[in-house]
Amino acid sequence: MLTLSDPIFFVDKATGEYTVTGTADAGSRIVYGGSEAFYANSNGFFAVSGKLEESENSGVLSLYVQDSAGNRSDPQLALITKQTKYSVTVSGSYAQSPGAGKYAENSMVTVRAGTCSGYTLSGWTSDDGNTFDDAAAAETTFTMPSGKVEVKAAFVEEIKVGPFDDVLTKAYYYEVVKWAQEKGITGGIGNNLFGPNQPCTRAQIVTFLWRAAGSPEPKGDTAGMTDVVSGSYYEKAVAWAIENGITTGTGEGKLSPYATCTRAQAVTFLARALNAKASGAAEFDDIPTDSYFADAVAWAAANGVTTGIGNGLFAPGNNCTRGQIVTFLWRAYTGK
Picture 1: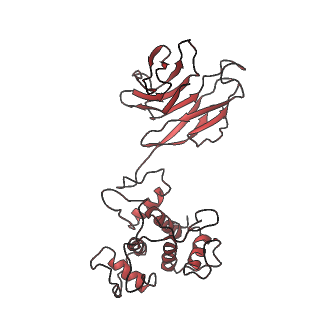
Picture 2: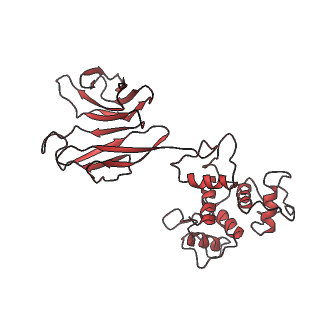
């Protein structure tokens, strides 16, 4: 049986030239385009190249495996288009009449959308209003009607956030980072990067909170914190955080600015910055009622700042990433 290793036709929108790769049994005869044929190499790999005519915006290519006796696999049909840079593959052929062919009436048809750098699947539609098993999934099924049906996959272009090359529209933190950038809460880590999956340090979170508060000029200094570097980007933020009771450091006159901020510390800093109070207890199995962060976690959960990590757990000691930290801030400050 022919299987496509990556069911995407990489299409040049300007020229219509495309390439598709796939795998089959080593040495298999691959037939494509109805008549042209060649053989997969000793590893079973093959690559097909072609070009849409200038007058065509899309086309369908059929590929199948044929053995020495002339037996064929089910065809793999792929739709290619110059306009939206996507492909759709179908497991089998089409129904020629009710009760005949691979896709007889009421049979289940599987369709797969290819992947293409810079584009994300937004959903499937059909011209007869067919119900898909999961209209948002890259691979899904639908029930074959009695006649012809046209199935389409819609794609949206991934757009980066401002100068950040590592924050795209499909990321859960896309809107969050966009908001944080517009509010001046973060400027990234340099080299056009935000670093959403990097651990967030204690210095970074107090700086985020300070900027979210409008970057007020602190009245005092860093109160003897010996590990706070004079003139550092976070010096004023730390002084502000200390005088407002957001942090008292980690003991022995230290702030530990480069230590990773935990989930418990993150919601505690945030609750203190907003003078937020809990109206009940935290409903997580791993939050001791006498812990310093119990009230903060209860407030965060009650106000949609966090829902925990699942299975009734909050994971207070887990490290927080920069993407998670700004998400906490976004939810707390915007109520979203």
